[in-house]
Image (cartoon, rainbow, N blue to C red; front, side, top):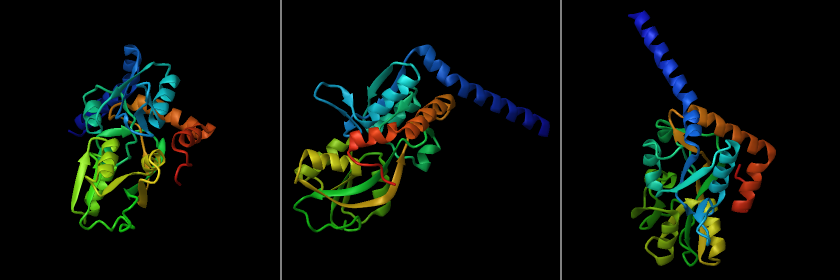
Length: 255
């Protein structure tokens, strides 16, 4: 029995190794890289006036594709649908500001961090009654559905209602129209909105610490992960990471 178990474990290990070696070869045989992004979360990922995807996440995807010498096909998917699309093989990578979370790591592979972010609460400028993430009693909170912010706010509690929405743009629109009292989002998105609509909103407080963001892959995409990690490591070493962060967000990465 023990010998049989040893043999079975060896077969599983060899199968896993073969799958890891083959995933990038299969992509190369197809001839292009499929990257999913929401396209609705500036300055990470959004559509400009020329109907082109742009932003920090798009820069990273194009950087990875160039390194792999593969053309990239960008696929816009609602944030809630990105992980199911990745699971079903419709995508090779998801690049859309996804926080590296333990529950997602059970199902997917993450690259080494390609960005760091803080979570913030944003209110309308004339709302002077909120000073921290604990001042939530009686308030309605807008978050992106299936996001790190939704998970965190469900743990914090204390609000009147939590309203998950399809995109960051929807969250800020709901704050603008008064459908929610507070938008809980990433610092970079809040700063982008504040710059685009000066005097309209106020960033109240940061919470949840500094969160690492990763590029997401299927669990068996070991060769692809190794290649992506190499791109991330080089970009961090040669200054590309810092340049991309500053260019897209206008600030240095949080430490």
